[in-house]
Image: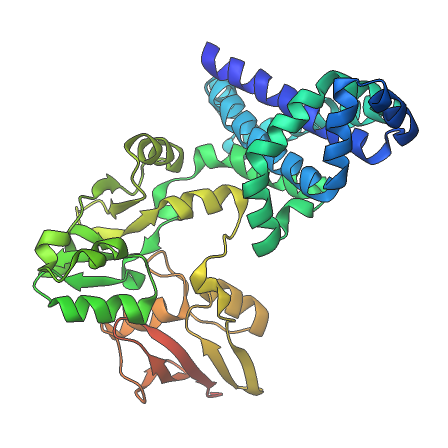
Length: 386
């Protein structure tokens, strides 16, 4: 409890400092800095260097503020959850609403409004006091900030994004693995007795960096193979298998995040109440619960959504069912067993169909346009009016 409080206070203070420094760097008196620089004041030289790469410096500050925000939210949630749940009779929804609303107000006032106002009033004084922190933060965070700006552009968004992340982090304490896992129907896997060439083909087709290995069927997962291990020469799959953790689907995502971080692992198997495979969950899945969707090498391919006529469509099979139903007024069944169109097809077909196959479900006809060795990629969907 004491450690969590200490982390919460420290991270809130650091958030406020990043906000103040960002504002100060945008509105400081350049003439005064030049005068102080000629007088060889240490802060002036440092501020002059920072101002030459102002946008990258500010991007670094925003990365630092986002990280601090995450630490603050998780730490404070760990402190408040046990206290607030003493009033469980108020209802879970009301307790979470009170928690999020109250702490969001604290963040906006203490970490954004107050430091912004103080820094606007006296930006040079803020820079003079904390230039060392600004320089150190920029040195540490700039490599990460440059990558994020180049690939995502997310750090240049407005503070509203920070609040959304903060709210996600607070809700994260109530998320269980069932809610953030990859369902069993969408697991990229291979049998332990497959050949090395088959394993290579699986990696090539899927573009994943890890492939699950099972014995006999997907309910008996024995580990996974990482793409890095392929560079050690041709070996039987059994010699490449890495250990994997097995966890119940009711376990909290926050507990697993802590476990994976400590053990330096990045993937785990999620088991259902009968001990079978419900799905898998990765470190990326857990982080996305807080920060939102993370782009990776697989996300560069644009998902296809094409309406041919009122009742005919062409879709990438990786699009989520919930989105298709909402966007196109479809009535594709939703389930905890799958999330995407590919998962729906595999679940009801009980196998991966071949290209050209036409599947029928109620008033829907789904033609498979493209597949890989382990998943459906593109389909044509036609609705027949009854």
